[in-house]
Image (cartoon, rainbow, N blue to C red; front, top):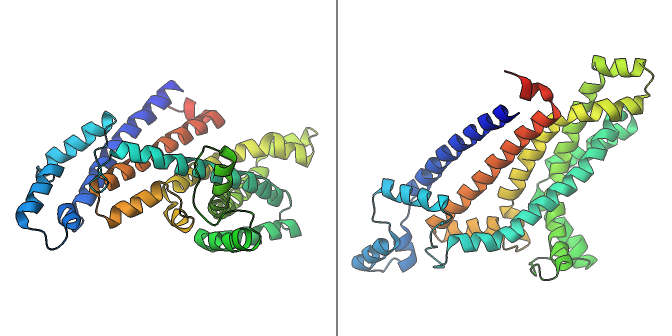
Length: 314
C-alpha cells in the first residue's frame, strides 16, 4: 500500500508541475494588457509603463513564472492588480463559501443517488427501475442553472422558504447553511442522476458474477447477497464518479454562484477574467487544479482500500 501511495504522489507532483506551466502560458498568451485595462484607453504610455513595472509585468516571462511558482510554494499567491489585496486572503474568504457548497452538494447527490441506484438495480426491468431511470434521464438532460431558476421561483419567490440569493456568512451557521441549500440542490440533482445510473449499471454487472451465485447457493437471499457482496464491489466505478463530481462541484459552480450571488471562488474567477486580473486568475485556477489532483489521488487510495488487487499488483 505504501509503494502504491508513493507512486501516486510522484504522479501528483508531476501533474502539478505541468499544470502550473500550462496555466501560466495560457493566461500569458491571452489578449489584452492588464495595465492598459486598469488605466483606460486614454492613459499615457509612460504611465502604463510605470504601472507595468510596479506590477512586475515588464520582467521576462520565465522570471515571472518562477517567481509565481516559488511564491505559491511558500503560500504567497501575489497581490491582486485590481483590489490591491493579497490573493491568498481573497481566496481564503471565498473558499468559505465554495468548499461548504461543494461538500453540501456532494452529500446531497450521494444521499439521493445511492438509494435510487440500488433500488433500480434490485428491480431491474420493473416499474420502479423505469421510474428511476426516467427521472435520472431528465436530471442528466436539464442544466443545473435551469434547476436553480426553478428552485428560486418555487421556494424563494412563491413559498418564501429560502432567500433568492446572497450569503449572510457563518456567524449564524444555520442561516449560512440555509443560504446554501438551494444552490446545493441545484448542483446536486444533475450529479445525483449521473451517479445513480452508474451505481445501477455497476450493481447489475456485479449481480451476474459467479461469487454472487455462490453466495446465493450458500443460502443467502437476494437482498443479503446484494448488500453483503454486491454493493461493496460496485463501489469501485462509483468512487471514480464521486471524485470527479467533487472536483466539478468545487471548480465548476461559476454559473450557480452567479445565479445566487454567492461570493465564492467561481464568482471571483469570473470577476478577475472580466477585469483582466491575471494573477488572481492564475492563482485561483492553480488552486482548483491542485484540489482536483488531490481528490484524484485520494480516490486512487480509496480504490486500493476497496479493491486489494490494486495495492498488491506489481
